[in-house]
Length: 194
Image (tube, rainbow, N blue to C red; front, side, top):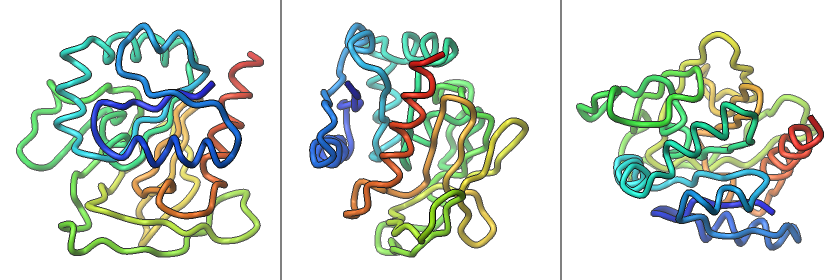
């Protein structure tokens, strides 16, 4: 069972992808629901809003604890920002924002506003053909020690993995290609065995 954080953002699109893949999925809104799932997707949306709602209901602390113990998590766009150790942009203080689980620096809205959204094919490490990627007010990531860069766009990491954490600055849930979600399911299987 895969959980999708359903506090704000495009969680319904991730659930729709998982259902198309015949993967059981639930909306996660409370900390105790994290014990019912084998992995969690943090969707795109408004990172400041998702951050505030996670803190209000306590999901942030429980998620941090579980991820540090090997629980798989996949953040897309705002989800990638929230996983980052350092967040830069829009005057945010990194002391009060995010989960600080992924050793990257995230630069919020680095590709511009909603009007500058775009789609482009990406080469992904280990994939035989390119993956369509939708960028909407996407962050730019700078990867630090321990982070494996799986895909880049214009020299910037856009898909990264650090052990049980996967993060993309694009929205794989907005295309028909399910390979990024399938990759996350492999991460979940890997950590379920250990």
